[in-house]
Amino acid sequence: MKQAADYITEEKRKMLLTELADLKGPQRKEILKSLEYAKSLGDLAENAEYHQIREDQGNLEARIAKVEQILKSSQVVSGGGGEVIEVGSNVVVQKEGNKEKISYIIVGSEEANMAEGKISNRSPFGEALFGKKKGQNVSFKTPGGVVNYKIINVS
Image (cartoon, rainbow, N blue to C red):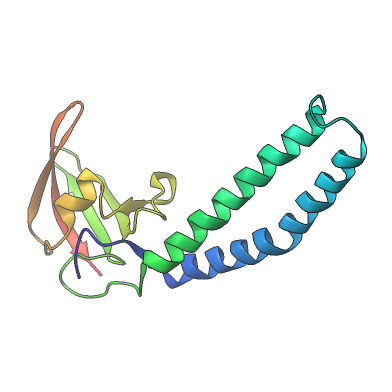
């Protein structure tokens, strides 16, 4: 598995497909309906509602293009489970000088969410962990200096 590639989980792929169907279906229809109504209000040059809806339409189309690009360029991965840390691996680490053990899941950049314990494979921490095994130590730079962790478990 290449570290630099774009990855998404099957769960994220399904979420993106659902979002894309909603964007292309109901949301696009709603924008078009609103656009027709705004056009009926008269002079388009001074019609703020028309201009706002056109901006909303541009944002909608940009999001559709973004989701389609993610789906097209990303490789779908299943959960880790091996001894080597890769996308989908659940990793338990312990910060040097700290007794607390923290669990993270290595995910693609589209799914990263620190609040949920999901670290991007492209983040400094994710890059330091990628390819390592249980028992190894990793270091990476942060704005506050170099941070050291010990890998307690990989699943």
